[in-house]
View 1 (cartoon, rainbow, N blue to C red):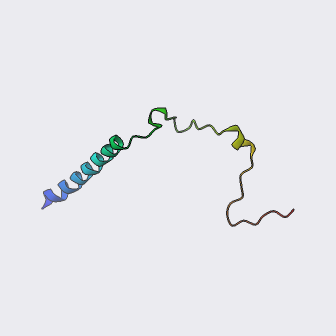
View 2: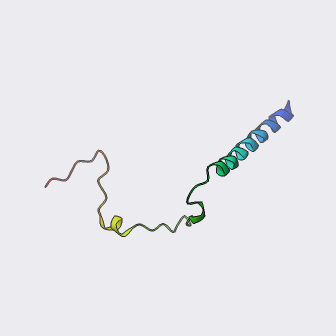
View 3: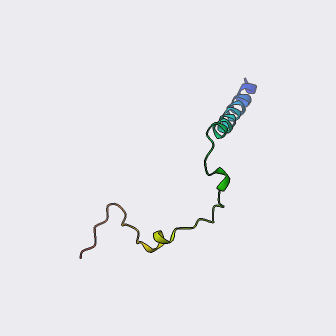
Length: 63
C-alpha cells in the first residue's frame, strides 16, 4: 500500500510531462525560434505616444 502511495504520484507526473512534450511536438508554435528574453520587450513607438485608456469603471473627465 505504501508503494502505491509513492508510485502513483510519480506515474501521474510522468504522464503529465509526456503529454506536455507530445503537445509541443503536435502543435509547434510559429514563433518558437524567435523567442526574446523576458526582460527585452520593446514597445512600438505608436503605442508609447498614445495615452492609455482609463480603466473600466472610472468616470470620464469633464470637458
